[in-house]
Image (cartoon, rainbow, N blue to C red; front, side, top):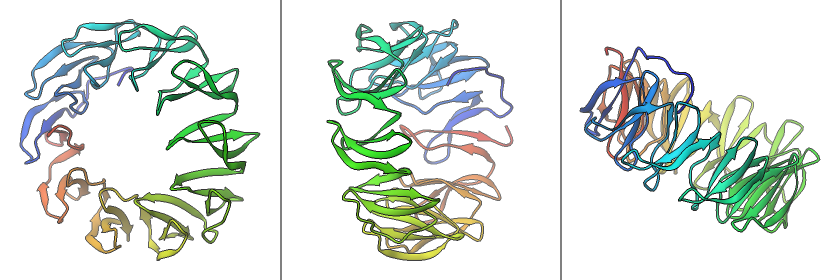
Length: 351
């Protein structure tokens, strides 16, 4: 939420879950509420409002991010980053060229050229010696030095040496790595889980992954056993399912590679909260985990359900819909976003 700004034609406001405007449209840009405060922009300046729309921290920043654990990352007029508290008081001075959010009590920063880490009171806890630094997750952080990636712990001890061309944390102590233009998987002690021999690896879940070779894809487990047939494309649908594509249609597999649904969908999104959006005849609807059609395909675009409410695009604009397919809010909206802390951002066509 930073950069060059302009005054927008359609303004942002906030509605409650009944569709009633609580804060009228007046902001050029707006973020979700977090800690009962939301970052909003008026012309070129960012500030923070409360849930009644009153400015708690007046517009003054070139960039602003949501509050986490009582701190928000902001950018001052000189392009430097720091952290403020919910009263707008600087808790970590804006003096960094680049700054990340806190994760596990560490925040990555860049001071001129190199990256290091700050603690929650702004002290440098790991000196800026890295070419790149990511957030700590599960006690470790991926860092880059001399064009290679490795892994450090919170004591700045090297756990995995700098020898990989790319490195991505996938959760559950599994890392995707690239070496000599091939991909594999390792754990946080550099133990090889999947040999570094794959053209590409994606959709890793429950000791299963998708391997790509010669523009075809197959589902494979960590022992190297191929579980599925070879398809044009395979991707994780979450909640224990994978999508597979043959020609221009999509079906569903389980994690053992068994076909559960033959190819019939034009597009298929991952399951969230037990429902997945699908497209047939260029219209979108929803299925459940038994693959039953719950909401018929009649929308131009849809989004996942969030707390029982989904955004859908119809002839009347962006609407809000419940899981039973009934409209909660209908028509006249240019844009609506998901609810956070009981409020959602919105824009109307007829501002």
